[in-house]
Length: 368
Ligand SMILES: NC(=O)c1ccc[n+]([C@@H]2O[C@H](COP(=O)([O-])OP(=O)(O)OC[C@H]3O[C@@H](n4cnc5c(N)ncnc54)[C@H](O)[C@@H]3O)[C@@H](O)[C@H]2O)c1
Image (cartoon, rainbow, N blue to C red):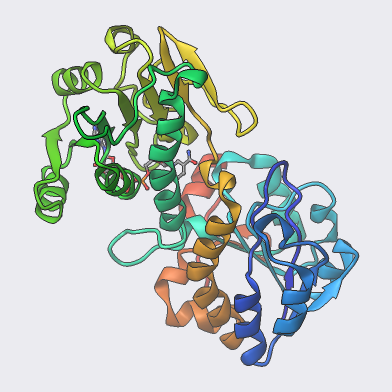
């Protein structure tokens, strides 16, 4: 198969869909890979590394799209990319179609095979192509929280770890899923006093079991959320109700009672945020202060660490990309139901129920 790796053109996106090691794997299986000039630079991968791995480097992005049966990307196609798509071309990337009617219609008209990273789903319901970005955001949240607590950023000037003779900071994490657990690992590792709240007792038991008593687990309810937040230096918001906006668990009244110069990192901001005083921010201007509390609410946190994020993403997308390239998408999906759940668009029809529902369109069943 001919596989195209374009440079991402969405504003501030520095990730790329394949590392040179990933390209090498495709080549080893007998495929051809076209990489756009400079595609990996934002993640620190140079053209000569891709060339050494066996890719052909193309100057013109249009050629990458024209030469390839499958385009692997990070973000959805935008701008001129939409004109370069060919009917029947496989687009394997984060698509997030349910939130974007215009893109859905353009791709339906183009009759692409649209396979969305975010809906590839294992039997147990987990989302293997989303979870690495959740891990990145969770781990990064403690680093960003530490930044917010520095006095020059409006914080109270507290070092998360404390030092000998000085208490460490108290960190509260609301939502103990992939993001929350990843945040907890770093916060505990740094020496902070960490509590984690979740509404799922089984999840709390699991977190308690694996934490070796270094994590305080607490049932999530309004009273406990209030008590933990007002006694914490740093609060991490990491709840998710699948398919819904995040619940506003941290009210303005709670924020008002928090210590002046404390901080909230609202990771759930990409789902609307779980704090009433949050609004989305960017990497260029990541924080703001409300009620004397520093807020960090960047909706695409992994973008701050594109090299780690690119490697993490390609660690999980490569195996699926290879399945598609080696077998063709029909056989690959027939063999792997998780990959088949990634199929969103085929032959001008929507194949993923949530996308069809979002736009009142019929949902067709792929017959393979
Ligand atoms: N800002 C970013 O860059 C970024 C990056 C990755 C993920 N996220 C977001 O982070 C959030 C968490 O993602 P995840 O992968 O950890 O999801 P997840 O499904 O693994 O975990 C979510 C957890 O929230 C818990 N929860 C739900 N309602 C709750 C409540 N009322 N109180 C306490 N806990 C509650 C669930 O029981 C679950 O354990 C999502 O909103 C996701 O979109 C943001």
